[in-house]
Image (cartoon, rainbow over all chains, first blue to last red):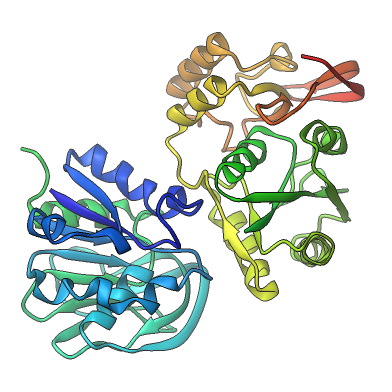
Length: 189
Length: 226
């Protein structure tokens, strides 16, 4: 079971269809069971029952999630695969002590893979869609996995399958989400 | 949150408007009319009827014109959004973008410059489920432009009902096109929606058609009871 976390400004918001539904569609197609929770409503039971977690993105002006770091503290003890997308990467990095730094981009950009990793295996450069005001500083215990000319685009925990992606893989890079599902072993046989 | 909907009168922006109404307050529709039929951003057939659709919806309409030159039209869009912000106090903009990264990114950049939220409730929507939802919700959508094979003259003026949707499905499979016309295969016009108080009746239309390229231009139309 994958725990999909909605980071938008409220539960069932107008942004949900833009940032959560596309991820749900990909999980559904891949046959991976999932449950969606708003970040403010994630329970200890949700966390305990999850084999992996995906933190979805938000609209550019939607940064309310960043004012509630306590809602993401469970990530530091989770130890199972995590994929934080855009705002989800920011929340993930913050939980591990990583700050943000300004880097605004809206649209397609080329992402270069910096270090070998099963998530990007076989790909060196790919175009990706980003909508962000800032990127994250790589937290202690993490490495930079990919970057654009402007900023860090992907990070990973040194020993765990905990990833943050600044770009939106659900837009034109569904393969990355599919690969994460494989890595997490969450797809039905 | 008060929102303005970037409105062309076609199915995507009208459905996006309806979705926005379920969650937030839609304060106005915003229509940018392009003098260039090849506009990169703003679709053109029958956008002159947006005022009638706005009247049916009981919403004010902010109208702006653009010459439709590639980057120049972004400035015209910015002016239109600025007017909507000043006149109706909108805090965000809704679009009917489905797959176009080009369109979505440009609108989001303008929104950012103006301090507005951006919403794309149809973004990456499952096309089959979307078309079903559209019909189930009571939208009456008519094809008013055809721009690719096999959409010939007989398609102009056809309503997308269940039978037509089945035909569109077969065409999408056979020709590897999109079911929604997202690839520019056809353009639509909404004559009735769940939030319209009356429906739009075409009183006089003209057709221009040649080689799988044609437009049904509505010369005169009015509002009638359902």
